[in-house]
Length: 319
Image (cartoon, rainbow, N blue to C red; front, top):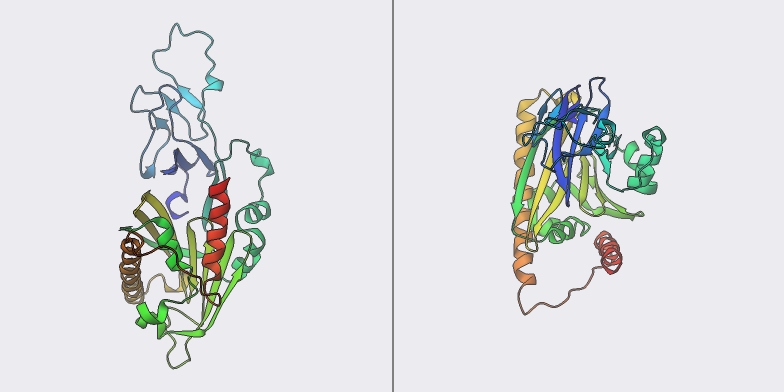
């Protein structure tokens, strides 16, 4: 959201084979389109920034921020051509809390039919109110983004996230000291699982972590973590069978946005945890490729969220 708060802001990306661009038009209205010129399919823009229109770098066809075709160069003599039929192809877009959501389904609802409740239900199911009540909202200030290329399959990264704190006392001793690990709970919803854990005692409580931490996994590859004054999100993007990109975005309660020392200290602590997890995930990937490993077992009291993830993935793979 931070990237496209004002009119003329845009950012582009790729989801599977879909190239997209999201922008705010002149009136500040959120728009999303396939980032593909209707002439010869070149990509219109890359990255993010500000623009008053989208001009194809190939042949100069130009589109407004509402998707309408404004200019088609050197088309004299073309037959049966209608400007109104060659605008950018729209994508259903909506917001929930601080997040922008895109729906790539071909059968999309008219924009007038989109409302916050239906979007929350579609994306998060019956847990949307729980997340809203626990601080997953748009009042947070965006801090920064960090990206990690990890030598493991994206599923390995998600599995590590979903083991109910099983690995925390062994791999994250610094993190474990600020949490009451006996309080770990896991709640399963339709396509979301929420792990929660209490902070340590008042004497040992880590102010970065706060009195309670929530870790929400949204199937198939998005994670939202809310703890103390912080929220961070993790998106695991496959780069191949044994490599993935994980994108971290950090958000902070506004009352702390000017506390540079606290922010830097918190990010250093977070980075330490990520490095520890990367070591684990890359080790698991190498182990999976060993002829000595076949299948493992679930620890029922802690790995419920992981099992839920595997069930959803299995259902998708056999369809």
